[in-house]
Amino acid sequence: MSDPYSSASDAAAKLAEITGVQSHDTALVLGSGWLPAADRLAEAGSVNAEFERAELPGFSDAAVAGHSGKIRSIRIPGPSGDLNVLAFLARTHYYEGKGVEAVVHPIRTAAQAGVRKIVITNGCGGLNPAWSPGTPVLISDHINLTGASPLVGANFVDLTDLYSSRLRSIARDLDPSLDEGVYVQFPGPHYETPAEVRMAGIIGGDLVGMSTALEAIAAREAGMEILGISLVTNLAAGISDQPLSHQEVIDAGRAAATRMGDLLAKIVPQL
Image (cartoon, one colour):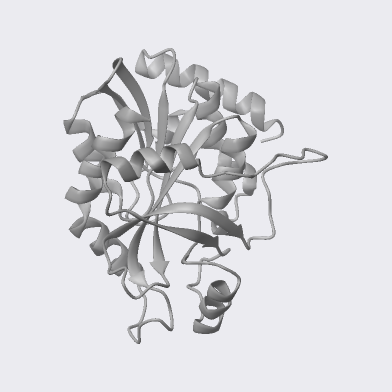
């Protein structure tokens, strides 16, 4: 993508053509283990359209198990009328080697499609032993250990309150059981070593994973308000003596699908 913003504009135009929706209100990026929750959210409204994401300029097929290579446009009732929600059922991960522009292309496309609020989710490892697999945790801040940024040149974007305190307050009002934590993005695709997990805790991290931070930076650059939600799918390396596997991530997401879907169905209309 030589001009990422132009490519996003082209993708948004094609999106409007396919969905028949000229402007979307909110976007969702669904991470590993979250796919079943999208179906629960759709049950709360109606589907405008669902299609392969590769139909849009600049997008490619999903490369990770537990992700669907589709984009879904959903109409849901809101307190002031119907809302159009753009749900990305897959993401491009930094470790796929396609570059940061490909990672954040969905975010920039959503911005060009009118989105001003975005919910970014992920499946992650938790450092708090009290967070059993299937626990949702609001992201209060992040630490980006990828060594990369979606911003180019002297583009000094303020990341204070990156994960909106206002949106987190709304989420906690709707579900007081929600806890908060700092998310640490590692490059992946290998899982973190126990020593790396200890380091993450020392520098202030509570959650570890391989996504989200770069997307959030791009969303802030585009002027969006961001709500981040992690689904703890396993205890991070060294917190538990059990080996890590991607199947564990998928299974934990399936087990928590009803709760995650109900959570999104409650939160998204109120943002």
